[in-house]
Length: 162
Length: 162
Length: 162
Image (cartoon, rainbow over all chains, first blue to last red; front, side, top):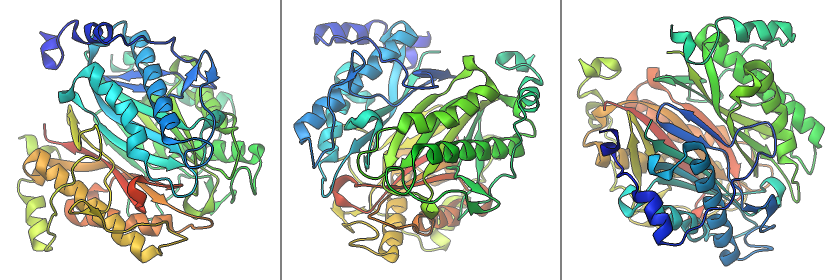
């Protein structure tokens, strides 16, 4: 049975409900691109921003206009957008075998080095949804700027049941 | 027939001609790496720069030495280099099923937030070549600096007919 | 025979010995993520830092606190960490068919444009280990900051014998 490859039917969607995690509407592209593309059993997502109802929830950089707590909430908001897009594309998050890779880009200014703590807000959400035995690899970088002026962007590759 | 997986024989190369898109010579590596690597039906490309005949077409950052129009032309130039390398590796762009992922790194200074507009110059070219129903996912970040001092670097993963 | 796909049994581990390349202990995660995730015949690694025994070997940015030579040693140290994690996950580096993609993020300040020279210290190590005919593609960017304040982070995708 295909789902034996790494997921149990129903478990992820059940976990979302159990933990009261409500998914927002997925974002719409800011330009000429798609929010999700599937190739084989990999699902690539566009860079997800902390945007709600087409409006940035936060603007600014960590180490300047924003502190770590705002950065963490921005990271979590972007991760929720990623889940929304994945669900929209797949029909159900139960088709996700695991998150393979998580990239977290954080707009920083000067000597800000709490990137891992900010990124963990996205990682912790993914762990709560997909399980502690399915953690993705992660790359975290501090960048000079992000689209719209938001503080965080996340990039996700899922392995899915084809 | 294998090409039924996502492309029609001849259509991409025909589109290039039709639209008068001439490909430059592909770039050569600036160090110890390859410009393209195939694994399974994915073709990964090195970060492509706006370089013509081994010389940077633009130098500088967006929001400082360069404006959005220069950034857009740089992004398009880098995307043309990506197509040139893909064609060199594959023999024909008709072997491309789609672009899966496009990463756009833009060197920015200060409060520059027009990254999506700059990135669209690369995305629009790829759409014109591969079709509007085959848009890739995209991540756009503003970085502190890029090799040689160029303003834009793009990263591409293609799905190809194996 | 499976190893005919791109590697010869024993050759990589033998090369490590021959060249006297000793692998350090692999790093441990700084947050909620895994250091390596396999999907199909691809092995993704988390962003590797120049960390030895849980302590950063270098702190600072290129073009400010650190020069290119420090950056090069940091890049090589991060690449050694990547090899250590790959070996830990695979049992033997002989299961690596090739490095597919190498991403190099370099924390830079101001007008620093020697990114390719810094990145080559990581690339050269990988070439020495896996061979000159197996060079990966590479993307190099100058970023604003990196976790812990280190100057270099590298990202690696391997193709492996499944």
